[in-house]
Image (cartoon, rainbow, N blue to C red; front, side, top):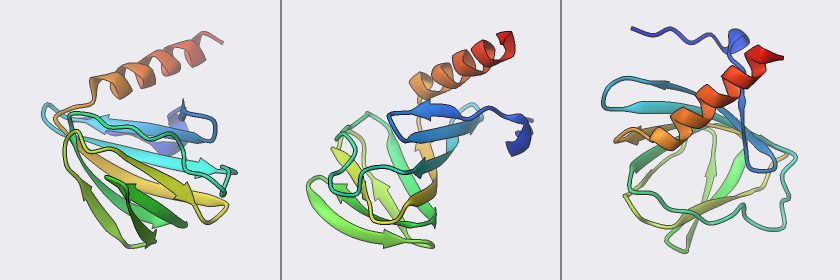
Length: 123
């Protein structure tokens, strides 16, 4: 069992204006993401991955582009991104927070978070 306390966990940078922290078990993981002061005139870089992703919008407003199709989303909305489907977001509000669930595990994001926490501990 893992307990992750927000106020005791360094947020790992994600791109130019995002940050996250992660919790995971053996087969699934959750990412709490925060974006602030991102450009609103263009989306963040398009990406895809071999993981299924479910996003729950906690705060803010975005356009979620899923395979090129725009979906305007706000707090309380959810979207499922199938594996290998290109997706991105464009900010419509100054701050955006979401919870992403991934399966299988995103080892890349887990490793980044561990490395960032390790580097933060060394300071």
